[in-house]
Amino acid sequence: MTAMDLDRAWDLHPQVSVRPEPFGALLYHFGTRRLSFLKDRRLLAVVQALADAPTARAACLAAGLAEDELSRYGRALAVLAQSSMVVGRTS
Amino acid sequence: MTATPTSSRLVDLFEYGLDAPICLTWELTYACNLSCAHCLSSSGRRDPRELSTAKAKAVIDELEAMQVFYVNIGGGEPTVRPDFWELLDHATNHHVGVKFSTNGVRITRETAERLAGNDYVDVQVSLDGATADVNDAVRGPGSYATALRALEHLAAAGMRNFKISVVCTRHNIPQLDDFKALADRFGAQLRLTRLRPSGRGADVWDDLHPTAGQQRELYDWLLAHGDNVLTGDSFFHLAGYGQALPGLNLCGAGRVVCLIDPVGDVYACPFAIHEEFLAGNVRAPGGFSRVWRDSELFRRLRTPQHGGACASCAFYDTCKGGCMAAKFFTGLPLDGPDPECVQGHGEKLLTLRPVGGSGLPKPSGDHSHRTGAPVRDCVEDPLAGLRLTPKEENGAHG
Ligand code: SF4
Ligand code: SF4
View 1 (cartoon, rainbow over the protein chains, first blue to last red):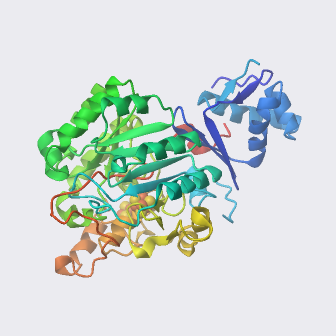
View 2: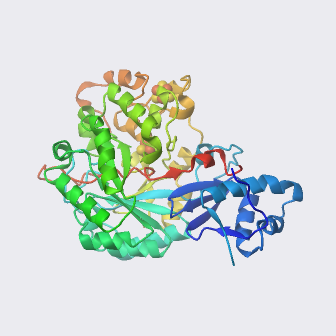
């Protein structure tokens, strides 16, 4: 799996809908018609912070993650990027 | 939802139910131009108490607020409702995706173009035979030609990945490769679902459900083609042959799916139209969300189930005793094996039932055409369009 570039800007794909659930969240991509899920609420906070953060790293920190958690959450983001749930942002 | 599961399997999280369904089936009308022998909702005639356009829109608004990702619209034949297109637009404008099942009767060149232009719509054309003779024997004369014409219009309009939806029967299992070829020819995706003994399906189930040998054939075929063929929760009872198939290996009734019928009654699953599985009505105070969250029945379905006679089976973890509706309508105990249990336990139980089918539960409503001609398009298998990204089966935690 290609690693997540934490130092660039990312966003949720515009066709992805996110629904918080007690265990985390469900994600549905209307383009690929695929369902995915986030296993915890902090990952949800990270994903929600992406749009307004200059980088994924900043989004993680804004969501309250510690430095030593970045690689684990980075891997989770990479999985989401692979299925186009999360996409690179240029502006 | 009270439990906070620590498991990383999506199905285990689903077992406790969700704050809102992932998708639900909504049968807009019992009216239908056809009279399919196995119609799960016994459709034909319109019910005069059908939800009005205004009420149906209010339900859609509620689904939007609950963030239900999409609805599977069926019937009856949903497109014969005069406000069908209006409701479809209302849903997709409100971020509620629509997958609808149709026998194709209203899919013209114009409507196909309209559908192809809407990213939030998916169409499932029902076809139960890869040839006219096999299809029309179940779905009625001319229904094959109608479906094929619809497929042509959809393909010509540039619609991608619409579905050809097949209920697997004794007569069409030998045609699996032909169905796949047909789907490929139209750029469509094949969706196979299980014949369940629901609605009029109960009357023909004994004669139409696949034989044990055919179940094995289907299983092997799905193992070979599974990634490109949608099945939803149809075949998890086949997990007893060895490995679990792709798809959702869980009975989602009342946990992740449910049915809203044309008059607004909410049932645990589209294949369980019986008062035993009636949770409430969308017209009652609190509407649909109240039913979903608070119904006694749904709360019960969300507690861990017991394996009963299946508990000692090595395949219980993936087969889970099969389909609740299939057991119920064939008169088998809900905590025992599925009637089509691949170990043969269900078959044994079936032979012990009283002869003549007396004592079998009957569906709550019968809207069949009184002429006795067959009726309808079927298979609103709630999850048959669902694609789980295989990776995510292990959690999005890389
Ligand atoms: S009762 Fe059967 S059809 Fe209904 S959700 Fe459960 S497994 Fe699926
Ligand atoms: S005994 Fe029960 S769990 Fe085992 S294969 Fe049969 S239905 Fe499934």
